[in-house]
Each structure stands twice: as C-alpha cells, then as structure tokens.
Length: 421
Ligand code: LLP
Image (cartoon, protein in one colour):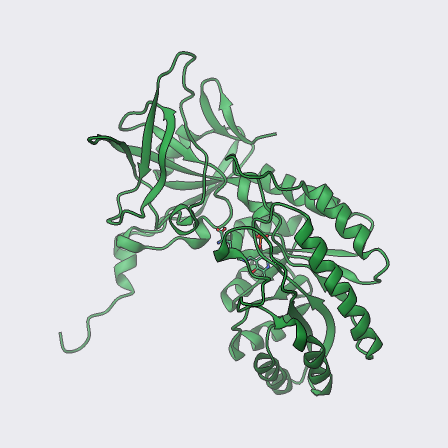
C-alpha cells in the first residue's frame, strides 16, 4: 500500500494532507512516512527470519536522527561511513554493537571514536588503513574487529556513478590480494579478524550480480578458514534497487533477494550482515514543492518550481527519474501539458525532468516528487545560498518538523571577514 496517495481530491502522507504541511512548514520541504519506513524495514528483516542476521541500515541514504531512531526501535543497526554518521547513529540510540563502519578513507580520529563506541566491525578497504586502525586500537588498548571489504570484480548494473564492485572502482581490496591482506592482518597485535564484507553497487535491479558476488566470497571464506582465519560474519552490503515508477526494470522484491541469500549461505555457518539504504528509505519520502511560474517558451513550457538541484541532486547527477504528481488530484476531464520541470538555480542542470506530460498546472500549485526518501535530503547542499530545506516526519495523523530550515543569518554566521578587510 502507498502511504502517499490521493484522498478526497488531494494527496496525503498517511493521514495528513500535504497542503496542510505546505501551509504550516512552507515549501519546499521533504515529507517522510513513518509507516513506509517501518513496512520496508520489516519486509526486509522478515525475509531473513530464522537466520542469524543484522540489518545495518545504511545511514548515508537518509541520516536524519528521527529516521534513524524510527528504525532503531525496530531493531535496526547502522552502516556508517564517517564520524558524523557514527554520532548520528549513537544519538538515535543504535548501540555500538550494531554499528558497522565502511568507507575507503576513515581517519584515525574517526577510528578512535568508533573504537570507543565499541562498534561491531570495521570494513577495512586497504592495508594502509589497516595499519592506522591497528595503531589507533593499540593507543586505546583494545583490539579492532575487522572484515576486509573485498572487490569481487562483479558488474552490478545501475548507473556508472554508483557501481562499486568492479576492479576499476576505488572500493575494496583487489580480489587477487585478499588472502594476502588477511595474512597481514593476522600478524597485527591489535586487529581481530571477524569477517568478510562486500558491496557491489546501488539500485541493482536483478539478482544475478548478488549471486555472483556471494558465490565468489563463499569460496574465499572457505580458503580463509582453511588458512586458519576465524570468519564469523559475512556482510553483503546494500544495493537492492527500488521501483521509481519509470519504464526501467522492476527490481526483485526483498523476499526473493532474501530467499536467494538464504539458499546460497545456508551451509556457511556465518552471521549475515546487510547494509540496505535505498530499499528502506527511498519510497518513504516525497519532495513537496510549489510552482512559482509557468513559463511558455518558443517550443517548450517550463514549470519553474521552488525546489532545486541543491535540494535534490539525483536528476542532475544521475539522470534519475522521479515521478511527479500534483498535490491536488486532477479532475476526471483534466488537460495535460508537456513540461520541463526546473528549479531556480542558475544552471541548465537544474532540471528535474524534460518533456514530462503532466496535468496542466498554474503558479501556486503544489506538486510532489516521489521516491526521494533516500539520497535526497542527505545529498542536499546550500548552493546559491539556498538554506537546507526542512524535513517533516508523518505518523498517522501526526507530523513534526525533524529538521528545521536554517535562517539566512544562521548560514552567514559561520563565515568571517579576515582581519585585513
Ligand atoms: N553499503 C555501502 C558500503 C555503500 O557504499 C552503500 C551505498 C550502501 C551500503 C547502501 O546502498 P543502497 O542499499 O542504498 O543501494 N547517491 C546515489 C547512491 C549512492 C550509493 C552509495 N553507497 C543515488 O542517489 O542513487
């Protein structure tokens, strides 16, 4: 069931009219549905019922602490990639024992913070990083739990900017160097090898790449065990795609993904770790925006809206498709127009879509862009000195602002004139 849908002629988020949120909070803003986060988390977690599994939600997809706390209540752990994300996860009540730390460029300070928090595992991506981690753990008098992120050289569809599992990508330990890396780690005094980690990409719309990556890692884990390493956990990352409402392939449902993983790993005697991001958050959010102007050009019509590429960069960055709908339901005999939907930023790339057939709209009309709960607010910037937009969380009839819009004065207060001016 969709939690963003028309009721009585207008679009609701659960039981709250988006018109009401727009009036109260102002546009543009992100609106999230608690019921959708919960359903997606539960569908994902349920597909691993009966096996030892940790669902470590990938914080980068949507890192608002209210979202993290919503998921924490359901039992979610967290996959973090920075000291900032670690602080968010801990603030939201996710215990260190359920936090995994990924990323190619962890700093010593970030490692120390994670060690102090007693995180579950560091997904280490290079030997130089391993040595820094060993030193950090030594300094604190602890042992760092480590899995190497290995690069299985598997092609995983998706946009080239979000494919990570090929050998030309910067991610993971090269396949041919994996055993050497484990041997090296075993020699270090403050490293405790606990697992193997892999993540091959994002918005993956078929099961075959997961199958290929798991098969390769399974083989590697057998060899590592034969070499005397104790491999307790196997993290297969995130990456499962979601439907965006365009004509691209519909990704497999989580239950099919779960069944595949269970079948392939049944005899491995490992604890499974998953790092889903988009699958949990993507369809739990809309971007609510207002038409500022309708500009009829020589051969195109532009809907100039108050949201822009700084608020949602996915179309500009990945040519991403987001379904667009008016908040007021079009009547039965509405007329359509073909629009380019654009924001106010001074770049042609500030275009959400080109030549989209939409119900005819006027200045002042509200519209939503769907499926922006993941990598929407999390990738926003203040380009053109446009303040970060508010985030609103809905739960049934209730809604609250979970991130406020900063004032221009607050933004400027972080900047200073040097002494010579
Ligand atoms: N684990 C690791 C190590 C990752 O790098 C990522 C995503 C995830 C898990 C979660 O992947 P997901 O389940 O969300 O596919 N900004 C892009 C997506 C970038 C994904 C980066 N890594 C977008 O808007 O499509």
